[in-house]
Length: 76
Image (cartoon, rainbow, N blue to C red):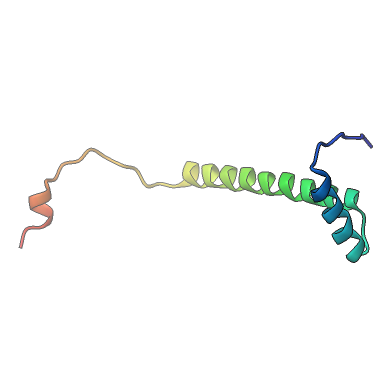
């Protein structure tokens, strides 16, 4: 496992460590969890986009040339 150096304000670090202790976990565990969530969210977006591309490739709908006027559409 790699080590990472992080610059953070002293008071923010102190509050984060205090909250981690209240939740019976470590500051490192919280940071690791948040990074995992960040990466996972990006992966879900990428997977969703790939699924949409696949859907569009299978879809039979096509967009043709405009052969109508606004007045024709709203003709009464």
